Amino acid sequence: MAQTKPPKSALKRLAELEGKCLDLENQLAVVQAERNNYKEKYEDILVENIRLQDSLKEIRERLRRHEPIEPQPVEEIAEEAEEEVEEVPVDCFADLPLKVAVIGGTDAWQAKVAERHPGFKIIGSSKNFDRDKLAGTDILVINTNAVSHACTQKAKGEVDRGTEILIISSNNLEILDKKIQTLLM
Image (cartoon, rainbow, N blue to C red; front, top):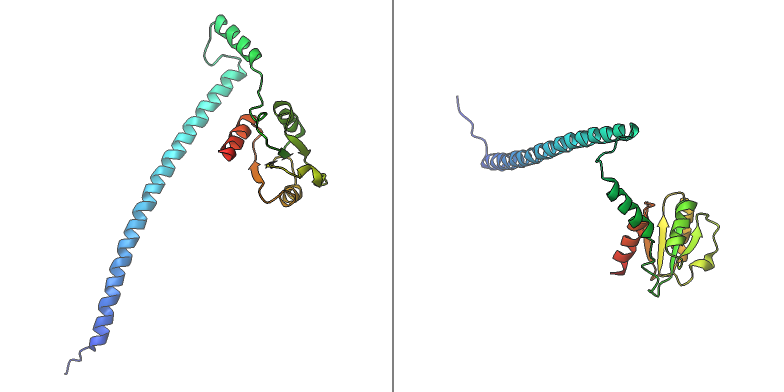
């Protein structure tokens, strides 16, 4: 019987395919190692999350029972109360020649913004707001809490091209101030 040899082109193609197979196996090993690393990190995060939730449950239980978390001497409590009374929110943007308009958020949040920053123009949360109120606005703040998508889109479309648009979803005024300051830097 005569032995038949495969053609050289088939052997060459086979060698190429074996090389590609080795490359793919190496890539697979790298990806699996990354996956395992991410799995470990995820499991560590889950454990940390569970620990924090347990700690939060304990604190809530202590608060429910009206137990102080850390007992403080009466003098320190009195000093803290005096410090809190003295603190008055200051409008850190009062001296700046900016026109800031605020749309969205709850009515209570809008009232807090107006109290803290009397120079800000409070537009409201209705999509039927007066477009002229946005004329010349330098910064448009859109709080996505308690506002319709139509209102936010209308507001974005009504401001001038150079207007900075700040979209937030927090009712914390400190965060609002920091984000505006970041825009100004």
